[in-house]
Every structure is written in C-alpha cells, then in structure tokens.
Image 1 (cartoon, one colour):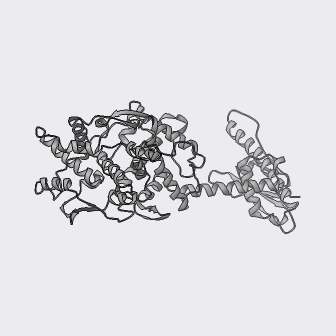
Image 2: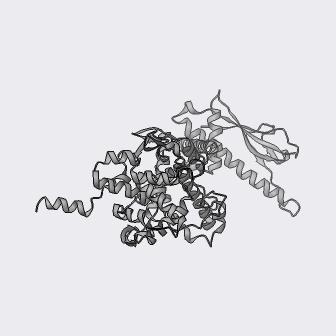
Image 3: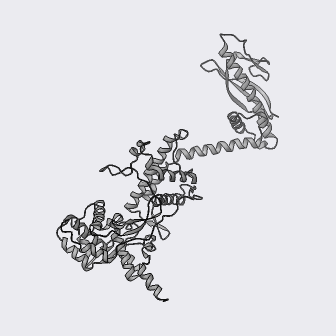
Length: 499
C-alpha cells in the first residue's frame, strides 16, 4: 500500500506562492515524486514534523475576515483539492499494485492522476480497468483530433473526384469525365453548398453545421432529398443562399430562379452523389457508405419515347415557310438533324471537315472522354439537298447557320405549330412522375430530331447495334433501349401471325 514519504514545497514563483509536491513510498526502491499543480503561500504549509519535508502537515487557513476573504476562499479550495489529490494517488497505486505491479511506474501514475482529475473520478470507482478505460478514451480523442486536424474539407473531396476521377468503363476506371458531366456535377456541388448553408441558417442548434464525408448517413440523404425537392420555395425566405451559390456560374446572364425538381432530376443528382461515394470508398478516403439502407429515389422513370413519323417529318420539310424565312432556316436544320440523329451539342459544332466521302463523321462529345469512337452516318438525298442550300453561307466553316440551342428549341415548337403537327402524346410529368397528355408541338425540342432518326430506323431495320453505331449510343445504353418500343403497326403484323 502506498503512503506519503514526505510533502515539500517547490521554489516560490514571482507571486510568492510555491507548488505542493508529494513523494510516495511504494517500495524501498520506488519512491516517485509528483507535482500537484496546487500553489499556496509557503507560510500556510505547517510542518508538524518541524522539517521542510514532512509526513505530517497542516494547511493553515486563517480566521475569516473582510480583508482576507479571497485568500481564505483560495486556501480552503487548495486544502480540499490537495487532500483529494493524495487520496487519488494512493488509490491509483493500490489498484495497480494488486495484480499489475509491472505497470506501476512514475509515468503510469502521472498519467492516471491527470486523467482521474480531469474525469473527477470518485475514489471508490478507481480501479485498474477504469484507468485503462480513461487511457483508451484519451487515445481515441487524440486520434480523432489528429484526423480532424489533417482532414480535408468535404467539398475538397468532391472537387478532387470531379477533376481527377476516371469514369468506369467495363468495370475499370479508365475513361475521362466529359465536360458536360463535369458541368452537371458542378450543379450537385452548388446544390449541396446551398443545403449546408440552409441548415446553418434555419437551425439554431446547428449554426456550425458542415457536411462531413464520414458522418453523412441515410437520414442526411433523406434531408438533402427533401431540400432539393422544396428548394424553389425557399428563395424569398433565404435569398442570400442563392446569391452566394447561384443555380449556374454563367456570369454572362442572370442566374435563373430555382425551379421545382422532379424525381428524375433529383435521381440524376443522387446518382452522381453515389458515384462520388463509390469512388471515395474505393480510394479509401472513407469507409462510410450513406447509401447503404437509403430507400429514397434510386431510379429514373421514363415513358416510351414519342417521336414524329416520317410522314410528319416530310410534312414539316415540305411546308411553305417562305413568309417566315428565319423559321425556314431552323426548319431545315431540324430536318437535317432528323436525317443524321446526332445530339444538338454535336450538331452545332459540325463543319465542312466533318463531311467525308458523302457521310458525316464525328466523335460524340458526351462520350469522347471515355471512348474515342467515331460515328459515321451516310447522308441521304434530303440531307445533301439541305447542305447544298447553305453551302458558302455560314460562318466559321460550319455546315449550317446555327443559332443558340435555346432559340433553336423555341423555333422547333413554333415550326410544329405552324406546320400543323399538334397531335397529343403521352409524356411523364417531370415533377409528379405521372403520365399526362400534351400536344407534341408543346414538348418538341432538338432531341425530337434524334428520336425521329432512331425510332423510325428501328421500325425499318430492328437492328439496335447498327442503329447505335450511327446514333452514338453506347453499347447497352438504357436510353437507347427505350427507343425499342414496338409501335402499333408492328404489333398488328405480329398478331396476324396467329389469325
């Protein structure tokens, strides 16, 4: 059992106070000394052994008076803490020396008394196992603080993924992300920054809230999903959020107001978010997978593609638009796109150099970073007629006189209405996800030309690989699979087989 060998005072500080020092007697050869961290005026330590190193002592607390009230209060606290300090030292030694004598070192006792003082452990609770618990707790706290100090910010990880992560091609990360993909990922980054700011502003208990790669869980994902779905309603209440993180970063035009998001839009954002976490786990940036157990939006919902028939295409192509010459130009561009089936982003960059041996050749922008596959589409007589009509009349060697993609889409809607292509089609409402009927001219866009090319070719040929080689769809594309909807005429042909 440990006992006091002696108590002494350190050299006095500038304020005249000295530290109480305790030396314990544990064995003849082990008499460790400990500085208590408690200070008093040397005159207040009374040695009952009449030596400056005493086993018996008393801390002299003067009688109370108005002039020495502060000193009395301080001395009473020092006396209480020093008595408790000695009790804890002895309890630590007793708890350790029973079965773990080899652990009983000066460092062990010093660490134990520091942690017990910090924890304010009761004497009766001091045990070897409890001391181990305190030591392990501190080790974990130090490790957590170290990780936190060296940890990168959440959005640093996202930007690293955006700029450097390879896209998976056939299960291997070897394809570069396209510029279009990066722009779409930037939409997610800005949305998450707005969410983070919204939480800080709307919840007084989370004013310091930050997204953390290791702590985002399925509940956080559900909260983010709810925010994305309702963000358009928050503009008036939290305008500064949208000023700081606008819907887009195009400084040339005013950022649009946030619009209601449908399931497909939110799902597309979450698919990118999940891809980020798959990469982070794969690269050992984190072991946390918030999508495990998440039961929110997991798949996009699309209806059967609607497109114009060849008769409707020809009706538009042959319609007299001489009184609307500018609209006639956009009509010609639309018909040409119907003949080659490319995306509008590829269409508007085509030049005379892309015309090779009677065909259009180009590498699709959307997939060029992951696979350098050239698409070649032979030009039919209608397409060649349109090209010849504008030969030498365009700028920058472009094949046709293009305008902005948005104005082009607006023109297509007007062209359909003027040409009488207004039948109803069934579409999926982007917000509710339910089927609705709309006039085709109201939902027409440049993508309708691509659908016209793919859908009508599939009716004639029914060879998805051949059509995909000209449309630029990747093998196994879910988007391309939707074009394979068999129309009523094909169904009638099949039913006749069992007539």
